[in-house]
Image (cartoon, rainbow, N blue to C red; front, top):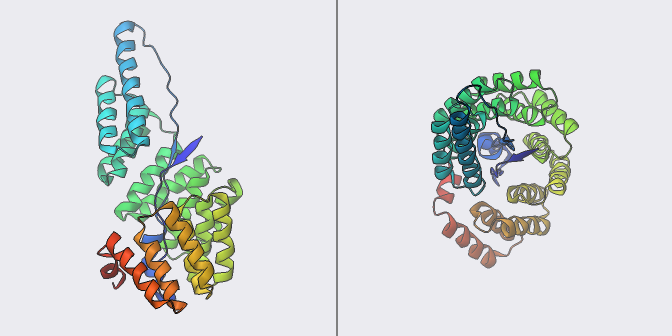
Length: 300
């Protein structure tokens, strides 16, 4: 069983010529972390001392997992480090440490932790994918691609590796190959809603808004709880001139994530396009309250 971080995706409500420019702000990669199974291996000789250390290490891993799931990443780092201090050869401790460091933006340290985890368990492809994601966030796209391809070669049925490969291929402007990678991810796991969004994004690049809308709608059916998914749908509806429907989509995004300045901004755009100028200004002001730097960024 796998779980994902709640990474955020969005399209900017801008002219088509700007869509590719803001790719990295839309298709952020999704991390896929396996639930950890806890097991004990007793070393012959001095068995009680070893068992005691491993027991303490396991308890710290559980503590780290608990903190991680509650997004308390700094505390998770401390817990995983405590586990490693007790018993340095626990794969789960190094893997968890890498995940927590990634979420703190410490990509170099996360990669080092993933390297140590892979030295203990070289066949753990989910960790290899996560290491690739950290490289991607550092801007080392080619290295990320190598890791995804290595994971796919080892496990061709790993949908998240195919998805992340598609993201990298878009960054390399290889849209046909990216589409194939997303389709492969969907073939393996039809509930991989991120891959549906990946396909939709490529269609947006080529202004095929109707087809993109169908894909975004499918993604929302698969996972209706992603605020950015509804935001993407709203932007696509706006491109089609369906402003009332777009507002409904933005409202859904805001319901899920009330502090999303971009969803408020995009809703304001649709209200403006409907001629509801006074109401749109109120919503623009709400977006600015949530993120005072939003409009400076959008002008770039």
